[in-house]
Length: 565
Image (cartoon, rainbow, N blue to C red; front, side, top):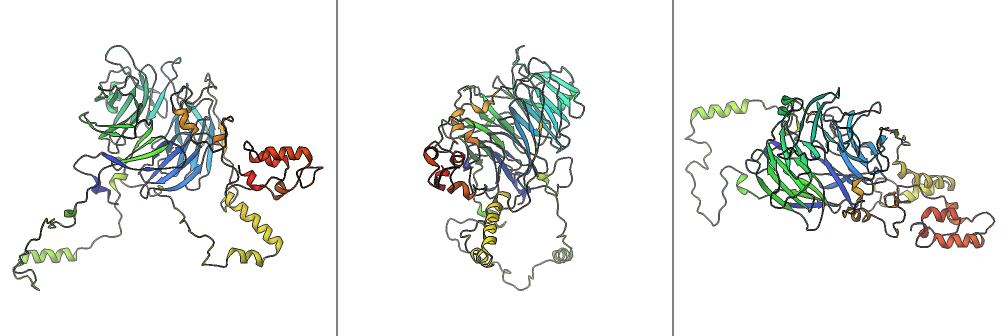
C-alpha cells in the first residue's frame, strides 16, 4: 500500500456511497484506529464488532457490555479499546485477546470518552450532569476537572491534538483550556452569537494535523478556531473564528462533526436526516452534500485517518462513502495511448537493432553508472502518513491488523489426523465421557487458561444525580427508542427492560446444563415430571413465555428444544 500516491491533486473528499457494513446487531457508534486499518463499531446489544477495513470483513467480536455501547476510543498503539455503555460502565479491552482489563462504574450516564493521544494511561470521560473526569488506568484514580460555573454541569471536553491541553465547554458558551497535567486554567473565551447572547457548546473536535479545532454549538453554526491563537489570547480572550460553517437555507442542526485525515475538510452530519455536508476548511465553501436513505436519522460519523473515506451510522447500519474510482489505462506506461480505432504503426529505424548505433557515449556511461549503483532493499522507510509531525519513525509495536482464523467449510473432515470419533472410541467409556465434557467446556474458555476477572472500580462524584437516563435510550420520544427495541430477540414481550441486552443462553460458547437437569425429576416425583406440581411447572416451562432457567429450576422433563426458546 503506497500511501504517498494517495495525495491527489484534485478533490480529496468522498463523492458517493461505497456499500455498507452489516454488524447483524444495531450499530450505534464507530471509530477508526490511528491508521484506519481497523474500524470498531459499538452495537445496541453490548457487542463491539471490529472490522478489517481493507478486506471489509469482521476481524473480531467482543461481547463487551450488557447494555448498548454509546462511546468508543482506540489507544494510540491500537492494542487497547476503551468503551462506555448506557449503564454507566467504562471498560478497557485487550483487542487481541478480547479480555477486559478493568472496569469503572460511574453514577451517571457517559456521553463521551476519549483516550489521551500520547499517554495510553489516561482517559477523559464526560459524564452526564457532571464535570469531566480524567481517569488514570494504572492506579484507577480519577481527577474531576474544574468548571467555570458549578451550577452549569452540562460540560463537554476533548484533548487537543497531542494531549497537552484539555478544552471544556459548557451550556453558556464558555470554553476553558486546562493544562492536562496540572489542571490549571491556561486560556478561556466565550462563544457568542454576534451579540451578547451565548450559545451552548455541543461538541469540540480537533484535527489530526495542524492546530485547528471546531466547536459545534446549539445555534447550528460550526466555528473553526486556531489553537495557537487561543493560547496567545490567554484568559478571557476574544479570538475570532477562522470559519463559520452553517446551512443557511434549511437551518440544519448538526449531530456530529469531524475533520478529514489531513485536516483540510470538515464533515458534519445532520440531526434531522441521513445527510453529510462537507466543507473546505481554508475557504469555507460547501463542496459536497451526501444524501443517505430518506427518513433515516444519523447517529455517528467518522472520517478515515488517511483516505478520503467516511463511515456514517443510521438505522443500525454502517454506510461507507468514498471517491469514484475511474480506471485510467494510460497510467500503465508513460508512452501508453488509448486508441479509438486502429492506427498503422511506423517502425523506427533502430527499433529492432541489436545495438543502437545512434546512441551517444555520455548516455552509455550514465547507464553503466546506474547499473553499478547499489540499491538498498533492506532498510524500511517510515510511511509519512502514519507518522506525526514530531515523529521520525513509526511505532513498530502498533497493532494494525488482527489475525483471522480461516473458515472451514466442512469441519468434520480432518485430513491431517484421525477423525475425532476414532480418538473417542479408542479411549475408555469414562475417558470418552470426560473428553466430551472437555469438548463442551473448551469453547467457553477458548482452549486457554481461566480468564482473570476484571477489576471494577466505583467512581464517586459529589452532587451528581444517579437517576439520569442516557439520551441514546430515547426517553424523550425522539424516535430513537424504536431503534433500541429493534434488536430484541423473537418471543420476548418487552416487559423485562434488561432482557434484550442479555447474552443469549446456551450458544456454542456457553456451558450447557448438566444432563440431570434435563431428564431427572424433582424430589418425590418420578420421571414423568414430579406429580401435578411438576407437570404444571413443566407446562409453563414449555410455553411461549418460558425462559431456559425457569424450565431447569422446575425439574420437569422438558425436552432440550423447550429450553432453547
